[in-house]
Structure formats: structure tokens, C-alpha cells
Length: 224
Image 1: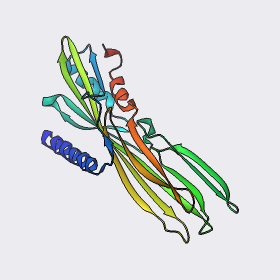
Image 2: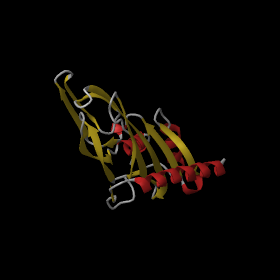
Image 3: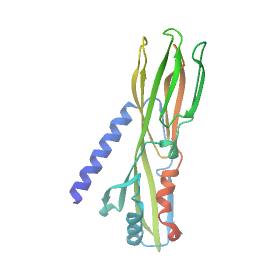
Image 4: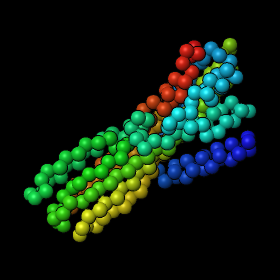
């Protein structure tokens, strides 16, 4: 069983490393290896058991357990990433004498679907922008006096896909990724269709800290 867990970790690490290689304009993470460090009053074994019994949820899943290193790998997948990642907002405004005015404003981290009028094609363009989040949090436990130090660091991968549908247009199908760590950030330029033309928007993503806080919250009243 332990061998299988190690293979899962290796696969996840390889996946995240591949994403990092494609990430444009990634800013280095600030100094500090972890997003959260907290000392709790319970010993390592009790803290370990509390975390294992409380972490699994709808979006949180224990990916692997490395007992010899006292490390829990937690996989987080979300179709509405804005809870865990802040990528700013995107505003789209479209005007057409026949199709009227259409205005949209949505979190850049979340999926959205909207219509804009292409004045050259004299038609509406259906824009589908889908996003998803995959994050791998490492929760490490170390003895600390009479208690346990809990340290959490996370690798984030945001995926973006834009598809366009319409008649007499040059429809686009674009896939992009951003890779960043706890306390870090990454950005990319995105061409947003506003009609026959596009505008350039810089999408910069960074963690909200909610993921790490939710993991620590499992410890509840045992926190020191």
C-alpha cells in the first residue's frame, strides 16, 4: 500500500512540474517555505489521526499518506476556483445597433459564458471560458515540545480554456495554464473578445489562503 501511495505522489509531482514548465511570467514566491505554520497541543500521532479523519470532503481528498515522513498529501479539485484563488475580475462590454448592448463582469478564476456582437460578421459570438483548479497541499507534522508543528505548503495549477462559436467568424480554441505555490503568484495575458476585435487583459492569480485555512480548521479546539 505504501508503495502505491509513493507512486501516486510521484505522478502528481510530475504533473505539477510539467505545468510549471509552461507557465508564463511566473513571479517567484516570497521567502518562506509554507503558507501556514501552527503549533497544536496534541502529540504527532493524535494530530495525524485528527487530520486524516477530518480532511476528506467534497473538494478535499487525501491523495497519499507518507507515514515515515509524517506528511499528508491533500488533493483539491474545484470547478469554481475563486474560493481558493484570486485572479481578479474580467469586464466585457459589447455594443451593436441590432443586437444591443451586452455587459458582463465575472471573476477571472471562474468559468463564464457570454455573447458578444461581431460587427464585421453581423452576428453574435458565443464565448465559453472554462476554468478549473487542481491543487496539491502537503501537510507536514513535526514534534514541537509537548505538541506538534503543522506546516502546510501547496502547489496550485489553474487551467483556462476559451472556445468560441458563431457564423462567419474566425473562432478560437485556446488552452492555457498557470502554476504557482503558496504565497506566490503567476500571470498571463489573455485576449478577450469584445466584438470583431479583442482586448488584452492581464490575469494574475494568487492563493486566497482559504485552502490552507480549511485544512488547519480540521484541528479545531486542539490548536495551541
